[in-house]
Structures are given as C-alpha cells and as structure tokens.
Image (cartoon, rainbow, N blue to C red; front, side, top):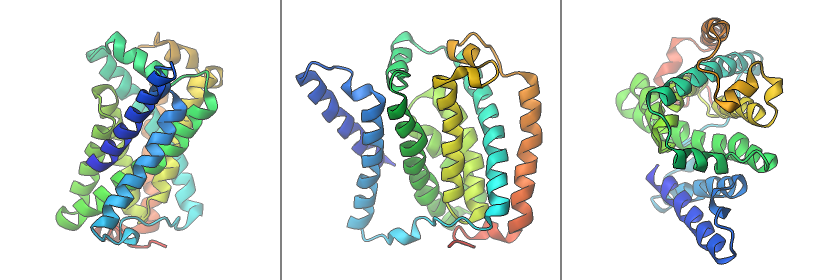
Length: 263
C-alpha cells in the first residue's frame, strides 16, 4: 500500500512542479491528473511485486462466476452500500467539521466542470487500483495467515486508510467490509470492482446531475443533515437480500480459500 501511495504522490508532485512552471497551480489537483496518477500508481505496485518475483496471477482473480446471481447481488449491495456510506460520511463530517482548506482541495479534485475527467478518476481508475490493491493483494495475504474474518476487516481498514483523511476513512472502511466479503464469497475481485465502480458512479451522477437523485441538490449543497429514513430502511432490506443471494450460490465452504471458484 505504501508503494502505491508513494508512487501516486510522486506523480502528483511532478504534476505540481510542471503546473508551477507553466502557471497552472491547480494542475496536480484536477480530475484528469488525479486519474492519471491513480492508474499509474498500480504500475508501481506491479513493478514492486515483480522485483520480488511475486506471481501476479496469485494476487487476484478476475473471474465473474455465475453472473445471473452475482450481478443482481452486486446491484443490491451497491445501492445499500451507497446509502449507508452516505450516512456514515455525513455523520463523520458533523462530528469532525472539515477545514475550509481541505474542503477547497476536495472541490478541486471533484471539479464538476470536468465531468469526463472526474468519471475516469472515480469510476474507472479508483475502483481498478483500489480493488486490486486492497482485495487483490492485502486481503489474500491476511486471509492465508489469519482467516477470512480478519482479512475482510483488515483490508477494509486498509481501504479506509488509503484515502488518507478521516472524512473518507470511516465510510470507505464500512464499504470495504462489503467489498471484502464479496471478494471472499466470489473468489474474484471483479464483482468488487463492479460494485465499487457502480457506487462511485452514483456519486458522480449526484455531483454532475443532482436532479437525477431524490434530494440530490441538498446533498451537493450540504444542506441535508442526514439520509432519509426511507433510504436507510431500503438499505436494511437490500443488504440481506444481496448477501443471501450470494450465500445461496457459494455456501460456507468458500470462506476458506480466497481463490476458490475463481476463473
């Protein structure tokens, strides 16, 4: 994880130097450069593993077993996870108000005037990189030594820490538990990549087209204090439905091996 963060920070520092040289101080903090730095950071991880002769095929499986059950489960868990993450994020910001400087940085990174760059950064680059790192490398390593429960929680905490700020740590860690469980149950990181991408796509739609989501503008303007109770009740129904759908397919034996049933 340190290699990934180090590579990403080095790339963004390079963009900052170039931006200062060409008179564009925000070059390092716009969605396009964020997407590029995130995608290139996975190269640093792959290179590090190759140096130590780690078999990259053993770090992650990209199969999508039994899609007629897995895909509906992913959709149900995506909606439920997004609702819960929104509530956790809002509660965190109420308890720990975000400083103006940090809020301005987020506004630059999530610049709505660059929708395609933002789409590439948070819907493509982030899910691919973060799932490969957290559920493709960290989770199997923890699982081989301490079992599935520790692996799911540990990789979720690593996922939260990867965001490097308290306002994203808690909701990312909560979502990470679902992503980790999905990885263990499916034997593949691909369902988690899809769930992560769909989750971020909803957030992208909220930022770019808030009218498409009920109360969307209130969330964007941060005038909403909490997620509607009806949404939380919906999440409470969708979560067990998604878990049951996957559980029926895999059974308890899948919890023992991270690569069971992979393709």
